[in-house]
Image (cartoon, rainbow, N blue to C red):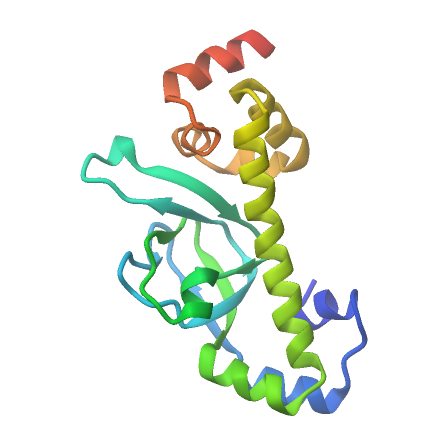
Length: 189
């Protein structure tokens, strides 16, 4: 599915709007294990993932203690959205877990698209709603579910995550050690 198809699943886009919007898009290839955004950098893009997987994490000196708190996949928007909106430095990093192809629009270009097209506000709304729902669901999960329930829900809702993401990141994401995740996996198999 291409970016325009994805957007037009929600609302039709005029050719003129698409022309302006797509002229602002930059296709970026990000190599596996590369950093899309460092702690302390201000996010300057909202991107649409055409291919690949990224993780959001809080780095620690001891790599084993890094806290993974999010993943993004193909046909999803990706951004350190809080930093993007506030224009303040990010408190976390985004890393490519596989080689990624993304379509990015800069903050400045997006403001122009907002002003000049009907579609601009739709893009803003779609990306912010998507990023908000992921964040909200994760918070609810951490507050209301056991680690085992979080793992089983991940398995059901995002089976690609279990297949394509290293277990140490999944363990961190559900809030347990790798050893605890191993015990959970043994119990449910």
